[in-house]
Amino acid sequence: MIKNFFIALAFALMLINPSISIAAESPVDVQEVFVGSETMDGDALKYPKGKAEIRLQRVELAEGGIVPLHSHPIPLLGNVEQGTIVVKRQGMEDLTYKAGDSFIVGPKTPKHTMGNAQTDNAVVWFAAIGAKDVPILIPAEG
Image (cartoon, rainbow, N blue to C red; front, top):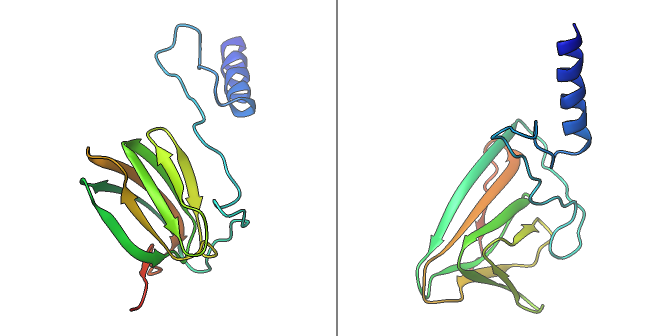
């Protein structure tokens, strides 16, 4: 009974502060890496209607690699694992992200490109919570 109480207490403390370890000698260490409720442009996040779908993508950009001009109909959380990328938004300043940086893009983010800013490969992970049959990326026309 007492053991169950302490387990429940430890779990409750983890919910309050997810950055704490389960126990001092535990090999499990949970750290919150990023929390956001707005895109890189300051727009509030909105999710599409429909059957929910979660996706995780790994994008690797070789030297000189650029994802052509595009937009996103759903919010995406990006995290740069390796290298440095530059996001070039139409009519706005370029944004540079390096390994360890996270960012959010969404439906109101202006059309943009994403390119590798260095000679080594860049790796970016994207997580999306959208809806079934709603694409993550829409190529720009023209």
